[in-house]
Length: 226
Image (cartoon, rainbow, N blue to C red; front, side, top):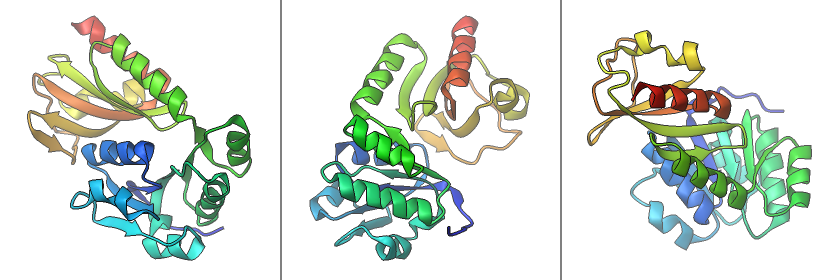
């Protein structure tokens, strides 16, 4: 297996249907760098001028993946919908290239079982979108929600004055809730470089990533503070 020095801020998406495109847009909004590949030029159009590493390819094979630099990603999501074989081969190639976190869309339980067997984490978009909707409906402070798999998510919270005037070090979301801060949103500005002395202000929004159980605990904490 290939060993690479991966970039934790770099994500790869293979296949830009509705699921892949919405995922790319969410990651861009969170300040992440994204590599996208598709064999259909029309699928690339919505993301032109928004993503630098956007590749129209003839096929998805090991050489094409290497040329794109996708082996340097921390996480790659396989969003190929129509061809089960292409989805499985893409996942296998990415795993063999040494990408630490490989997530694959599955349309059926059988496809999901095969993908899991080769080492991919599996998402079922219809199920996960229902889970996402339920999260948005049941949490007053949740502004947006992205399930990367059944256990790990990226979520945007409206803080109101919960952490106002506290620094990132004082709030200690990693120590108290095991959550990593991806970005701080202040009005129209997105702050991607979060330092220990970065101070929260009233009405800030925070984008965090972590285990869903820990995200729920943080949501409960914010709700109690209101």
